[in-house]
Length: 566
Image (cartoon, rainbow, N blue to C red; front, top):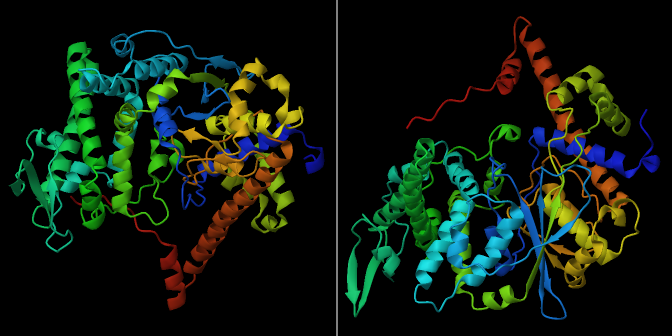
């Protein structure tokens, strides 16, 4: 017997939401992505990128962190980092750990272990950036050391992102797509560009029409030379692929020397690619968006079943509204050099030293969620009770359809950005200290309040996340008392557990109702197709099939997919 909505407690609503989001994820539901994602301040965005590392124990590179910060009345930058930690006991309450910065040198930090717990990594990021000196005689070498350090710490995440390029390009690597490209129609107006030193220093670059104006070397970017410019990108991407294979081989051989050499070369390649795609001349953007260089990509970037994907970096590359294939590929390139972009940007920023001197960082790690979900009969009963129109399909068919997407254990978590929004909302909106706002869920609450209060008082809390938000997190950000600025959503549904602090049960019930409506929509659609298919099969068994019946059967027939010929 289901309880009436008014009598249901918070944990029952949470269980329902866990169940619904898990089902919708397995139905591959995607709501509308953000039409105009809000820009996150550069400093916070890059800092979040550098905090995103692939830890041992996170072999699939799925760990996500969320960061917020604000300046208090004493000009101290209060920063709070929230991340999942599946190693904690599920019953552990929220606890803020204050990160301490020591006096190690940059060299001592970069020579440390490549895999450390998140709290130690945050301290290392703080120390490493603080130790950098833009005025040192070896500042360029320091930047290279920082980039290699962050690439090594984040290698699992980097590799996961890099491999998504093959899915993006329809089963081929990007360098293979570029190698097959030919174009004979006008696309690029002629322009002479000053060649920077980093480009002149690349090995094996093709010959490009050049001229010298005073002391400057200029190359022509035009329809006549676009193929050669594309070759530069091809070489970089092909070499990236080869050096990742070299790292893999070195790991297999257990050869630290070979791995160090491969990582060094890989780091230099990533730095060169970062320069190339960030170059203000926009060569790479023009090649990808003004030519037909990626027109041969015919496979839509979305596997048939995301629930079995090894990596969730795929979510970042879902095509955005109005986005062309070229823009999508360019965004992919930006994701794989994100750490190099962050280091370059932060080390060029004169304000970063002042921020680092006045920084206070707290870390809250979110424990695993309960694995409890509704039973399959409970889901079916609730659907029929909420949506009587579903009775026309029959309970057996309804149960069969749900069974193919159902799991009796919740495998998701409280998303980092959701937990962070709950904490900010708790202190900013001063929710009643019961239910979702219970003070008992927070240990050392005063320290946490000191960190969050400046953020809550700012009126519009900026939440930087190491990837785009899922649909539920984005929805939550717009339905709390506090105001939030999020990086946008790809619209995808994931197994999602509500935060235990800072979200009133009335908000959760509103979300739950929307999720039931969405499940009703997708299940009804699938059951309707089932009825359609049965009707089609029955019609085809009659003798003297009419032309209209033949057309009906044809519409229900799906041709097998074949591998595209190279």
